[in-house]
Amino acid sequence: MGLQINTNVTALNALRNLNNVSNAVSSSIEKLSSGLRINRAADDPAGLIISESLRAQIDGLNQAISNSQDATNLIKTAEGGLAEVNSLLRNIRQLSVHASNTGVNDIVAVQADQTQINSAVASIDRIAANTQFGTKHLLDGSSGITAAVVDTTDLGGIFIGGTFGGVATQNGTVQAQVNNAATLAGVSGAGLATYASINASLSNVNGTTIGSGGLVVINGQTISVSGSDTVQTLINKINNVATTTGVGAGFVVANGSGAITLTQQNYGNNFTINESESSNLLIGTTGTLVAGLNATVTVVAWGLVNGATTTVVSTFTGGRASTDSGLRVTDTYGNSLLLTSAGNLTTAAKTVSTVTAGSLQFQVGGNAGQVVNATLGNIRTVNLGNTTIAGKSLSVLDVTTSTGAVQGIEIADEAISQVSQLRANLGAFQKNTLESTVRYLGVSVENLSASESQIRDTNVAAEVVNLTKNQILQQAGTSVLAQANSAPQQVLSLLK
Image 1 (cartoon, helix red, strand yellow):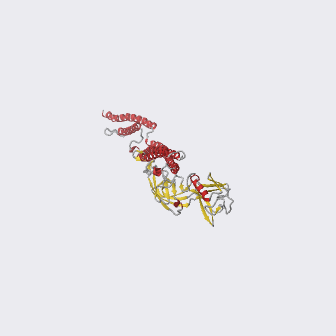
Image 2 (cartoon, one colour; image 1 turned 60 degrees about the vertical axis):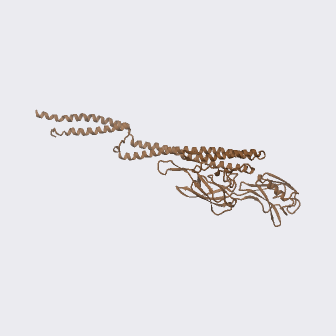
């Protein structure tokens, strides 16, 4: 290569390399000062796309965690209201038990019980109307299920909660079809002691005069008669204690003679006739025990299955609880129907109720469609304890009569069961859905953040090595450039 003055190729080469090294030093300083490997798209276009997607997912998950925590606070607010309702219901039950003590109470004491019950009922309705989270009402039915009877001939009451057939309950009708009718326990037919008429003497039993009266024990209640008493007398004595035994007596005539029949007043297997006697007055001295049958009903309602609203079929069975009538049919989710005597005999599917379903939807995931729904219930007193006695509910509870006081206990028991079931459902939703979501989303955020950091954050140790190398090269390049710039001066020696 010859010697030139105008173009110093060596210096240009050194300058180019020095510029490259200087850019590398500046890049390393930027990465170390920001802590980011990718400060602009040019640093790593593909890595930028991936990391921005991860960042969006992380932000979404963090918000979902916050959403779940807010939802938990809402559920706690609703559950706090329900806890107070449970306390009021226990107080109502206690007052009903006190009012049932008719042998001691006078009208003043019973009216005092009724006044206190009325106050508690009003408080429950007030809690239902006023329990809020922000401006959102929680327990008045706007966020719950309300079932209304449309066939009062066949249905005495209905309670449908947020879960039906294992899925979320939706708006629609409720159809019921009785598969097996409930029956009353009864003692009748062949083998009974016979009498000429209802006015015959008990001594003239089975066409003879050998009867002498004696004792009849029905469901633990002892009844005493003499041989001179009439059949009508024994029937009257049995019916006089029917409120205690649940068993009534009648007289049936067939083939020129008659017999005393016993019939349980309540349907189902929980209500029996346990009879024994000291002589041949009704059945014999060996005694007998008979029970009724519980109804089974196929119930069709609307539920949410795989995101679509469709009909759901469930089997309801009577007499599940030890005090339940065979006409009060329930499922395993706390839903219940109270059949009437007429409805018990209906074998065709009939529309008996309509359901209005309200629920709250919570976004508990970082992506679209990752939501859960919760039903908070409708605890207005007209909806509590409404499937124990036809036409009765907590809202019309009256303990000023002995019958009303007994009914008050039964209605309060069912209301307590309904509210407790609702509280249990909310507790399960809080624990198994919301709190679980917070935990597993926290793990997801941690792992996604680690992946995003791997792509976007600066590896400080490696970048310090690069900076040190490039700073040394920068110093060397500066020195070499100085020498390259002085090379053309050698031409001056040729001009001497």
